[in-house]
Amino acid sequence: MKPQPPSKYPTTPDGRYFVVRGQLWRCTNPHLSPRERELFTKQLMIARRDVKAAKQRKHPDAEHRAHRKVDQTKQALGERGEPWWTDGAPDYNRHKIENTPYAKWWDLRK
Image (cartoon, rainbow, N blue to C red; front, side):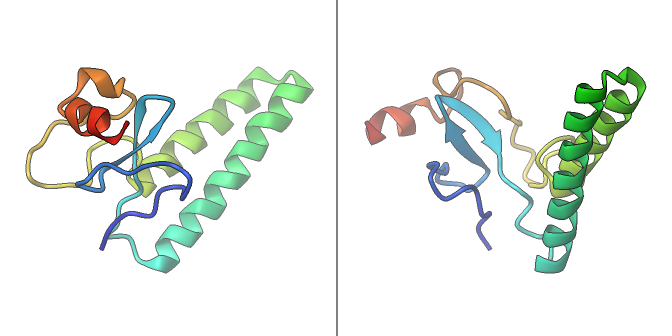
């Protein structure tokens, strides 16, 4: 099963990343069940709203907790933390595509 990145962004041929403004972002783990993916996505949206609310209230402790929840949820989705693939390939999450093995593929797309 191939990951489901945001549809407007190109996905690397191996399905591990999508590209935004020349930067790689790890796709969600395709091995999650639809129910798990939905649950974690809802949790992520709640955590992001909590970050926004804490910033508006100027409450640094609440903001820190909310950021931590965002990170934990993104790890559960497979978008951060240990890579979800098992072939030992390195992780290029948040790297500029031009500095990765995907550079040639990206140049051929232009």
